[in-house]
Amino acid sequence: MAEFSQDIFHRELRKTVIAANLPFRTLEHPQFHNLLQVLRPGVQIPSATTIRRSIHQYAEEVQRKLQQSLPEDTFIHLATDCWTSPNKLAFMGTTLHYIDHDWQMRQHTMGFQFLGGEAHNAIYLGNKLSQLIRDFGITNRVLAIVSDNASVNTALAKHLQANVFGPKWDPLQYRLPCLAHVIALVSNQFMKELKSNPDNDETTSAAPAIEFSVKALQAYLPGIFARSVCKVSKEQPASRTLSRVTESMF
Image 1 (tube, helix red, strand yellow):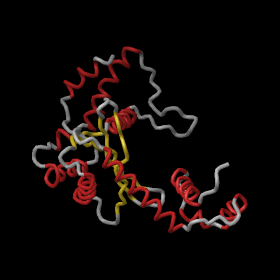
Image 2 (image 1 turned 180 degrees about the vertical axis):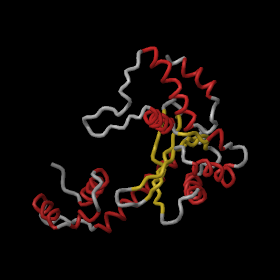
Image 3 (image 1 turned 90 degrees about the vertical axis):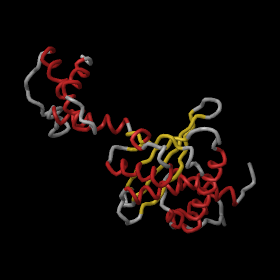
Image 4 (image 1 turned 180 degrees about the horizontal axis):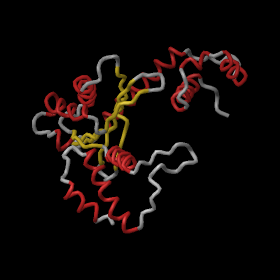
């Protein structure tokens, strides 16, 4: 058995807090202390403040190594989204993606920034993301940015063009809407058109009780899908053109 090391114990304790998403104060709970004392009498257990500081330092170290590992001659693509924790704290997560020299797709967590009490508008979010991009030194290497369809992200992309990337970076071309989010919007609107609204777990659908024949269903669904796409599309495509597209599905 390997000799006990306080440094290794501290490192594994830090990893446990991160992996299990434990509150920092768990380390100060008397029962947690009793458990560790049974396993290792006299063991020094770090405080909540110490482990929090250690995790922040570890995150900064990982970020520095990530910056150093990025190839200097490849484009970087970003994906970003905002998230609110169960305790009502808002964060903006950003990942980076690129293809290395061996043609392997690489992706890493670039940042997980706390959003304070200020209004989360395009300027505020844009400044947060701009600082992250500058910290990584990739202002001239970012090609595409993926985000959801919230209108603030369109304004955010324009803010990045004006303050980070310059006029050659087209926010309409290089700010890509998240495909999964688009599909979810279309699917939700599609189900609303069908009036599918279960009253309880045993009710599969509250749609009209009319049993459509296969031919009637084929004629009915393309129109619904066309209206659904129109409602979530920025460009509002002509229903006639979209109907021809949807008809090809059947």
